[in-house]
Image 1 (cartoon, rainbow, N blue to C red):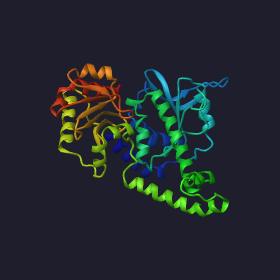
Image 2: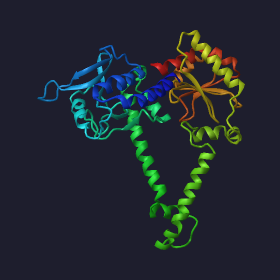
Image 3: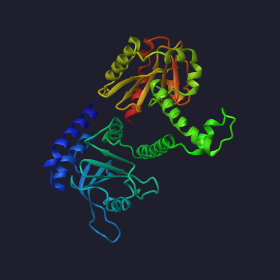
Length: 370
């Protein structure tokens, strides 16, 4: 929550300051340096942030990128700064030269202090992609933008994980655009596919044109129906889980999500266990769904426990391999979790068992900060 608040505060500051900034140096000091500080970097420590980093390119010596971000004594990201009033359209080639000359660096940012364009090398290793994988305007942040930026914080920056995440963002964006185009302008093949099972009429051009507005209207109604039923979630149960618990799930789907006293008590117990183990619990949050009560660290995808206290068979799902979970839950029935929900599932009898599984809970938490 603190990270989100810091970003929102930065967004307000950038909006207030931008009209008073007239050159690149002012942009760096008033907008970009504060951005790096929100990400957790010590901008005054050259072991973390090196201004004017020399990135020699071929025969060109003394080429300098505005900032090199370091971790474990190695550069991990370049940042090229432009003036706040300078559009970023024609500057990526310059950043690419620095990026391509430094194989250790897999991420680069082009920014004017308002817009941040993130680049990596998805198309060809160590060659910066022509297009950024995401663009973020810090004066107009969405929840999705905040989650993306949280991945670039100093304490969670892991290059390979971010490469995979960037790839997912590109695929998601492309598929999203493709689906939007498909729904707005359904092609003939799609219309044929939809009507072939309930119409015996030969599908001619006239038939396609007659059904086109019907298909578009049906798509709109279907999407509204899906959203109204709450079926779009960041993390949903797999078919296997729904089949396992179909009697409970079907009844539960009909109800609004209500966080129970037992679930809140579980959350308090988990916090107490972690606090007693001297763990940082400032970013521990929960998210209730129709299938489980999830506990996560910083961001939703960084979950470490999924608790189901409302099932006939109460259980905890973790990301731990089943062999490790068995060692940490010796007296409990442990099995593989349903596909897509986690790695291991531990069956419990009551809330009291949460306290008895303290070592398992601590190990699950440790995996979120590794």
